[in-house]
Length: 220
Image (tube, rainbow, N blue to C red; front, side, top):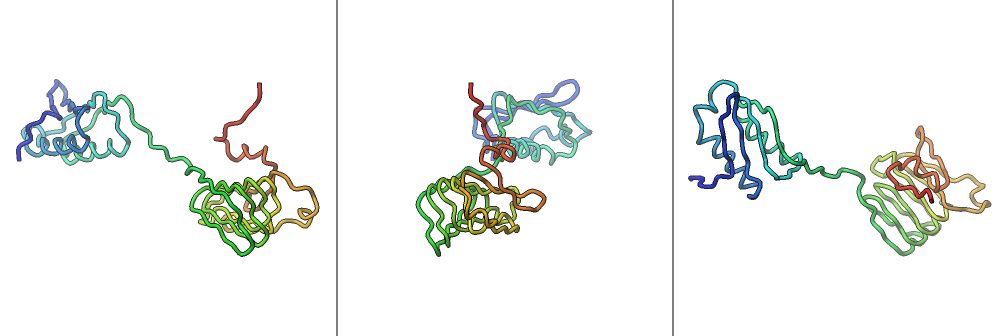
């Protein structure tokens, strides 16, 4: 098979080679031609002594994984030493916390609500009801049942509620029953978290101490 396109141009310079990669074609097509030319062209250069290589991608923006794909192809030729990799921008793949999924309703006694990830529940968790998540649990309503966050072992998970009066809390493997005074004092917006493997309860306004990526309103 003959590759007739010119998506990959290899130019010799005084101290090495420059690979000019087309920034308009499909990425897979670019990879195919790069492999082809390394196997069938410039054999006198690509099989000789160490050669320094500069890679230029024009205006093409690529991800870290795509960059590695290009480098892996070039590394198959043992005498090519990558000196520079010129791209206008490397697209950053977001690897932050998963998004919060919103659900609404009511979890009654005997019912179990399970969610993979972070959950914002609009409604009440009644006594005898259970909500479990691999991530955080936020209840915009009354939490009067059992809540278990970070069930896969995430010790940084938190449990928060507008009316915080659970019968039992669990974060990762740590279990805590509420103190007796929770039954008598006026409940409010609070959240639970782990500190030194112990369950801690704090006011919702202090949640930013743990979630420093939250935007904070400071007024004017």
